[in-house]
Image (cartoon, rainbow, N blue to C red):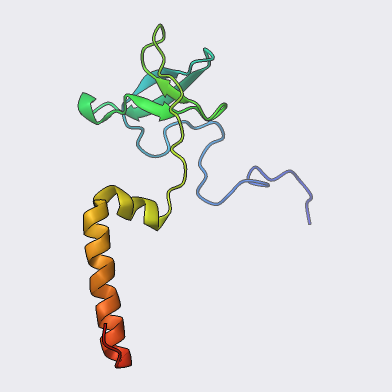
Length: 119
């Protein structure tokens, strides 16, 4: 038995010559820069065939979580978080006081009818 160095030791089957760069297809792409209000730049890559209107104008900065826009001199400001609303708060937005009283009266009448009580 002859001991020697194998040229394929440590490489995967079908890997090809070391350093080969043309495995697979590399699509054309464009780099788009985004800036947040702290001046941080984030670069996102998009397909060169993607229409301009499909590239977002604002993204969330991965480093700060702030909104980042494509205009370096005029980055988007931080949006105020809307407080949590309960179901009742949403209902009150949709109904007037008169409608609420009418609905409550109807519900009470139905409840009393089920229980066998008269008003």
